[in-house]
Image (cartoon, rainbow, N blue to C red):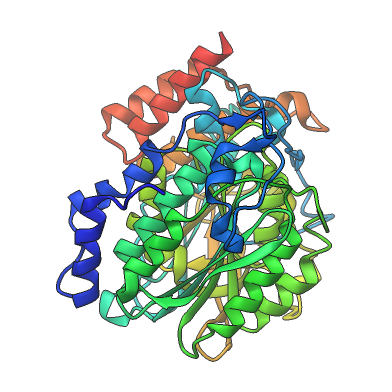
Length: 533
């Protein structure tokens, strides 16, 4: 067993006494789990076992048990599972005036794309979910002042259009939670330790992620760890973070090998979470996996009942994917959707730090659940509309008022953006009502159902500036990578077309404006252009 990093031991002392927050050097120390993990799988072909599994199998059973050799991980584009959610076409509001969907704050699709682009690969079209790309950038809308959630909206000319089509941006913001209002956290980590996880970008990064949580949760918060491979094992009982040495010791004992029984791991994780349940606390199961499941139930839909039942008991689910190549994006997203939680993907230590340090409260503190949005368009002023993204989050219109229907969860400080392309009628004038947007959700305090609404009016046909312009360009880039609406829509848009060259001009102008997010978008666009060549 490798010794604990010295800086982490120092952080343990700080946490145990509760004297101060971990320093940047302490956070950097968590990186050692990632950097010291073998960059490739080291299989002992003579014995038929993975070397890391054979050394540390006692982590799960107390005695060395041989496991089948960990299979070689395929290349980043091999054996991944993505499911195309489709591309929405324009809708006539005289036939269907309402558009209804569950709120989604996932970022997995965009993070997967960044990983593949970094390696010089265009993301598979079926991996692109436009809303997840857009929601990976800050909308710039302010946080609510009074309620859990608040609606905002603005609009401008659709940048790719030449016929007066408007782009309507709808923003839904979750309230911030001040540090003195943070709830206690009871976290159960369900860690995939099957053979396919035995690389630096998977189990090595999971170890770093856990170490970051130990350093940045509060001393009274608890962490439990369940591992699964051929079967599931409770590795660490619910343990206060003040006993960080015990938690770090469990992290050290994580070893990979064997098959992948996701069902057993998730069900045992929920058992452990119910045991650790704290009234008035944030109770969460966090699944860390590459999404592969080859033993037991392997379909997220089949696990839906167990996930929903635990969600109704106040235990929410977060799924975090690790490592491209033989990666199941669809299952990880599906599980999060069934659990009213959200899905992220992590492939570098910097991304782990962002998720588990910078975004920790949003990651672990829901402020609203079962959130859904409905927009009703006025046929007198709107001839056609199209929602960009959210294809696999669509709801029946009548389910907007149905409290039994699961929808989306929003964490503290989360910001959700929805973009509609709207074609005004010939008689519509600036200032006329286009329709109304409504949001419904359940409060996490008392399970009370809440609602907010906002009228939409026709604005001037000006190009979107600032964060609005960034969101518009991100959506157009996502659709280009996906194949473009010109190629996939069931009817011609008739509004011109977007090209990488035209996007480059738009993004350059946004960078000159110093629009928040524009520089990151410029980097993504450059990577897409290079990969396309």
